[in-house]
Image (cartoon, rainbow, N blue to C red):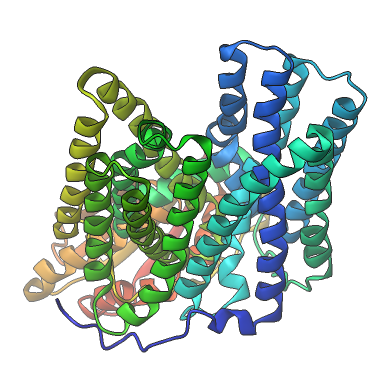
Length: 528
């Protein structure tokens, strides 16, 4: 496999040298442990209330539905408002809901429908926070440390997933569900304190603030015209679709192995331990192989583990298989997550991560339903066999959606001249779309190269705000080419200036090298 000399060996623990990242990670462990405890407590409480299987199943629905309803608008809000304040608001919201849940449980006034409503409200706060929480990671560590930081977040989550349910079971048995919910309330305190003390650098806006609707459209448009990000999101969704069989069918596998709930918990713990081992190995692997090679190996290991899960029928054997599967899972997720975070500029990062999260969660949800159906008809072993082979086959996506070794520089590159506005035209700027024209003069021998370059730049124009774009040649002056693009409003065009990145410098400078003289730019507003 090809080596990647651009990536020196970096310690997995290096991001912990940054105090704010270290403090947030430790606080998040406590918070996630509390979240997993709340999930177990809610399911057990629903059963204790004498509710039927439908109500018990609706607990999972109430916990997951907000991510599909709110993730994309939450990402838009996370890019519009101050991210630190948004996290404080959502954490405060969840604390208040958790307090209400604990109080009504301890006083015996809880009902199945009230439990569902409060579970939904808690998950809604988490859904609104998650895109923003992920978007701040590049603000906490350097670009080179981002893969390790992403892996550490994965380790933290898997530790919480292993500890939280087990701790909840012990506490419920000893003190009851209400006390378990109170522990969840306390688990939010650390995150609130750390975020409140965080002195985040706030960049002053020089452009009009976006609306939530406009920001959401801008996010979809950005992903559509960003081929690398689009392929990463697609690849992640496809891998999650096949790999979801491991999570969906693991309880059945544990039951068939005759180990019950304890065996299921042990297998989840082994999966989490494997994720920790995978994170440690990933840093060494990045110094030797390309990102694509590591990602491909990870999904092959994960797929092989899924196949083996259906073939091994002893607890000891399944523990080994789940350990290996956890390593493959964590390596792939960490690599793709870090790449998406690095490739999305700050102005759209939370929104892009929300779309990435939707694709991943959608793949998990759809895959779980499909593989559960296949298992019901053809057997668990057959379902895991085909799911594992499908996971292995996704490694072939590297031929069309390769994981990049080096990410683009997405720091701002605002070099466009803001046009002088005539006084009479100023009130009309908000009335309709803006037409921008750029006139180039191109010598005949440079025309093919110019056209290739202008179409690359056209994708940037569309990505950053243009809803129409085209290049035209003057029939009377063959050397004159006119680039035109339409933007929804004057404010949106001003935002285009701020959305250019250093990575856009190369295509624009390449284009200008094929043109003669300085391009002539005109801005026209809609006139009635």
